[in-house]
Length: 198
Ligand code: ADP
Ligand code: MG
Image 1 (cartoon, rainbow, N blue to C red):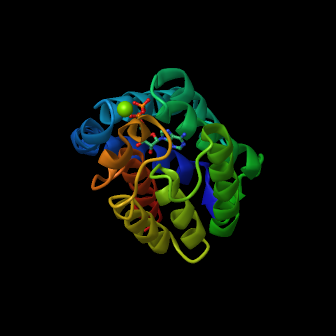
Image 2: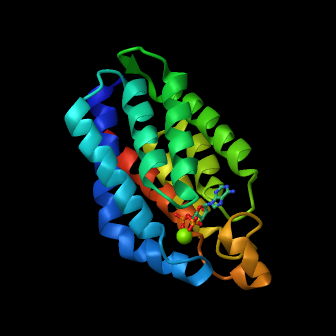
């Protein structure tokens, strides 16, 4: 079973990973966006870590709700409200139990991803974070490692796609041939989850 400490470590490990990979995320965003995805997420997850140090919520749901709120209030780009909605909705779905199973997390995460789809109007294949999140959450029913691998594959799979949502969609055909920055950071989120679980 996964407790609040597990979820805190998931968030702080994500913050460390995002910090390490920020330059790569920004580089990807410079090709098909405005070169701020790494700095956006670095700022957002640094705020998440700071809030969790100050507050230390005692349920998995409360950890994710707090993290989501921080992302919404500190990240200016599209990814802030989208990731914030993902974590807040997932956290709310987990309720106020002290421990949740991987299967429960997989189900809650699927709900969070659906909320991202409603907020941003994107679907699978639109070359967004959903292209890593959807296969990642589905594989989470199987194992943490499978989720990380599926999200990585999903992020790589955005390369040949044409962007239909977000800033990259303004490029039309020219968005083809580049990996989506948000799908890449979503793969980092699920990679961090698998690391903490290992
Ligand atoms: P901005 O585009 O405002 O500069 P970021 O650079 O931080 O914000 O984030 C860009 C990423 O956000 C994209 O790579 C994409 O994965 C994701 N994204 C943008 N718009 C949407 C949307 N409508 N639905 C889902 N994801 C989106
Ligand atoms: Mg950007």
